[in-house]
Amino acid sequence: MSSVRIDEVIRAFKDTLHEQLATRNVLDRALHAALRKLGYADFDEYRVEYIIEGKLITFSPTHIGTSAEDPYSPIDKPIVKIRGLTPYIPGSSLRGVLRGFIERLAIARGVMKPYVRIRIVGSQEIEIGCTGESLSDAYSALSRDEVRRALLNLDEATLSDLICKCLCSPVVGLFGGPWLASHVTILDAYPTSEVRTIVLQRVAIDRFTGTQKPGLLYSLEAVEPGAEWLFKMKIVNVDLESGSSDIRIELIKSMLEILIEGIQIGGRRSVGLGLVKLVEPTYKIVRVTPDKGLVVEGPKPLNQLLRR
Image 1 (cartoon, rainbow, N blue to C red):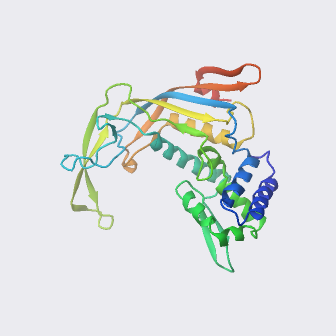
Image 2: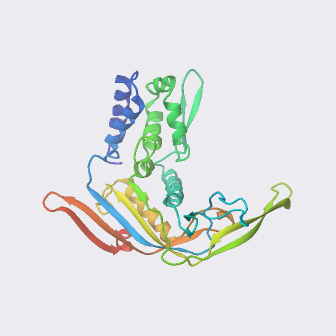
Image 3: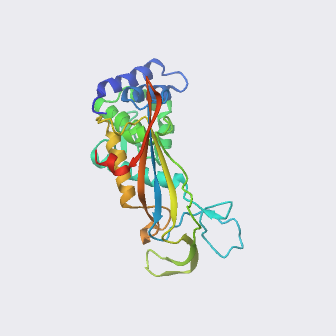
């Protein structure tokens, strides 16, 4: 994003918002104009795709829960399974954890804000959340007529934060939002062999007394450590080998490094459950070239990419 002039991004957003203030979906149009300037709204073409593959290994009991289908089941908190038989790791679970990590990293780097406050009328302010969990609420708030009109009167610094570090942040440019599709796809991870599960007995603790809550003993199903799963991630139109100043490249590489180092997924992470690591990772590149068309490179060891 450093190669893009921020004033041009803001101007594209405001001009579109001003010209079509009374039209339907004006916010979508204004955001799309800003995203085009940033180079994030590029799904009208297919340039390059990186395919990351490997194996996920569980290093502690892992619980990715689902609602109990059988009210007479002896297990209070079962894990998610295909047709109720084979455990798997939903891509959405991995995606949520990795997006959360990228958001915290982006905020620490100063390229994203957790929220932005904007003034509507007089001293009245609203807080626009910028993380994945609050973007839908932010979109609803900004769709109100009085808020859209207030955007035209914001000072440049606040509007720059709202657009470039919130609604169109590099994290949105990777994982998407209500107004942009995702550049990152994480597939469901299926086991490479039979998966063994265990049932853990747990007790709820009263946070005030620090003692057991009477009658709140429950059972928790978890996958045993050592289970192996096939991992696959696709990243489209972000060229990780380009040497570009696009901050998303650095964020993706950090995400892959932490995945190799180990992340926690699922429930009960605060007590050590859900540690998984990516092992034997490789990557392939699918490029579109003018002379040869579709060209596939690899697979190559992922470490080659991360060291670049």
